[in-house]
Length: 248
Image 1: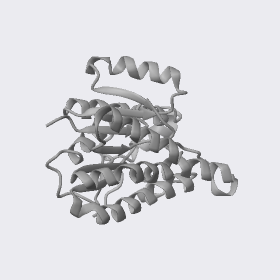
Image 2: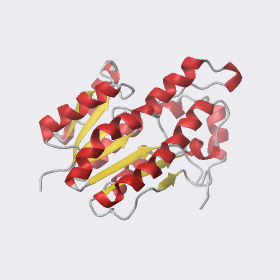
Image 3: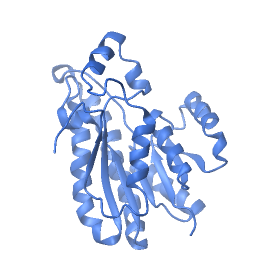
Image 4: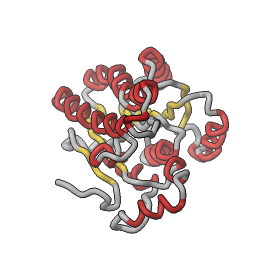
């Protein structure tokens, strides 16, 4: 059997890069999709993934644009024959309290964080159901479960992402396609490490395991959910947050 083909949106970001590496290590052909304008980060990403010898490649795409996602999927399909795995990891923040939030801060975030999930799934799910195999993982957030001050937009998008996950999981379950969410807690990503030291220390103090998560820990969860033999897990949300939020 030829390699399963995986596309990871936000693929050159901190979590995205870790996910790309993990999936490549699992034997997948990985396409990292991200904005081509991030030249400095893209150069660093290519250096970080050089050892994978073509098992990780970059395709430029703006996930907030429906047609761009269509062209992305067509380009991947033309090159590799299919898209078997989609990991929706692209996301932005536009933090501020609701009373100060502009319409653009709301809509810009929704276009990337939530519309991007629709755009990618809309253009890949037919191929997956037609072939009788597919794995979709949507990277949500613990703040979609708990809410967070100054993140009404982000929390709404991340909660909405899991509602989308459950609904789509029901639609495609009998076709060999699973759809799940992963909700990371606070991890060692560029975004979190930019938080002032004193605030970050307060966050860590609330995490029972006593540390930030590693991007690789999120990536291993994604690899588990996208495995060929993970077909009985669908519509689930997997929290990976060090005990920061616990529920059942």
